[in-house]
Length: 343
Image (tube, rainbow, N blue to C red; front, side, top):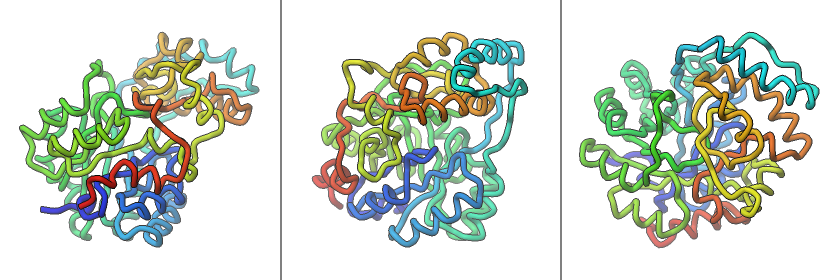
């Protein structure tokens, strides 16, 4: 069986980086290079997602749409209130008034699934949770392939049982949010290569893999281990076409000041890998499992920090390979990473 991301000339997937980092221009550049692009559907309403999908249709022969699948966890209200109290002075310094009540939502997931069924795309993937068998069947009925982001062997076997067409193995060294189904678990450091091998020993599905990719040698290792494509995100953060903010770009290139990454719940209440800055150091110790409540709570502060060009209070998402991210055209970056492995 061949799946959409196995049909592109190069075995490189442009990671779906939500929040504006994956732009239509980045989608087009990844496609132009011969890679497989994703439209990042997280944080978007249907009205915001629809034009991005239509632009992808115009610039890419094949592509995917990634969605955040709802995965609520019980909220510890006392811990949330303590976090609000801790964040209030910083918020006030930015002129942001924090809402004392936690905000919950499903990221418009059901509405986006319904729209994608009415407007089919080649592939839909989910992260944060596995798609239900019912959603898989509905997408299959309109000719859409389904992939699930997995971070453990157990998640991979369950995804296969639900009928997905492919899996995307995300190692813990990836930048941004981990796709783990259990955001409360302790995520141990390990290589994506080892995780990929474990999963491929148990699951026989087309598989892509990413997390901590820092260059051509890492791509080659994952392909030789059995991945049919390699996902890159951090290595595209400095691309001309990426929507990465100016302070985020500057921090990625200042390895003396930003010398490490960490999985932190401090920004969104869900583990995500970021460069360690003042916000992480101050708020990670009091952070809690509370996505999307913490995401909504902190987003005003993060927005003002971005406007002010302040990297110390921004979510500086980055995988462990961030030192090897280089400015330039995304088309060139993808060709350099995957050109040796053209199909």
